[in-house]
Image (tube, rainbow over all chains, first blue to last red; front, side, top):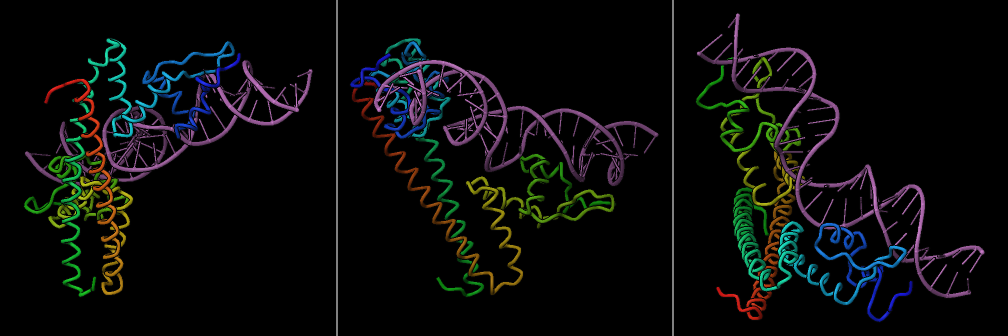
Length: 131
Length: 131
DNA sequence: TTTAACATGAACGTTGAGGTAAAGTATGAA
DNA sequence: TTCATACTTTACCTCAACGTTCATGTTAAA
């Protein structure tokens, strides 16, 4: 079967253009993060522009640090409702939670940096090693 | 052999009081993160206050995000510290390296937090979700 | 003496996000 | 038609930091 080269891509090309591997795309499909694309009669996946838009959304959200599990939750909501208005509040919630977690992490790391620098200072004081 | 109940604990009690398992303590010992504690003649570990101090330090550092591998490196240096003047500059270097890594991590997380809040803002703008 | 707690050591399980290999099929260009 | 690629699925591998269980044996405290 012929692919309409303008609108549709198969997995390898798409993966390259997105900077991921085919494994990733298949995994996401398997986890239900993205809809299964159409196939040729021979079973080859081909992705429409709409598919690609969805995948980009998933990648974007992942880049923000959400886990696949969290994204599965979003996908589930999406499939139940098909309404973005339903998803978005939940996405907001998740993002907010995530942001909070990040800030907690930052606070911890800052405290660690302070501890280390304090430890360092004491060593230097004691052994007189310069900075 | 009798334990001095005031100062020394054996592994189970200590683990409980620290909120870890005995497995963790034995593992850390095996990895060289903490010094092997004294044993009774029968082979039972008992930990002095100093041992416990060390363990708490390790747990704190771990909690703040250093890997066991990184801590092994530090522990190695720490043990070499017995010949101070030679090794201290190296310890300082390593601490500085860790500190830098921490700051890099912090910067990454901060930028991530900004991205998220920006993304969130756009969603809210678009879908009009309050808060 | 009994019983809880300890010891060693092996070895498999878990989680997250894929990597990699094997073995077979489809596609498309020459 | 043949050949080189690209594709398909299945299934095992990786890393970290332990958890868990098994198996078996020893010690210490009441």
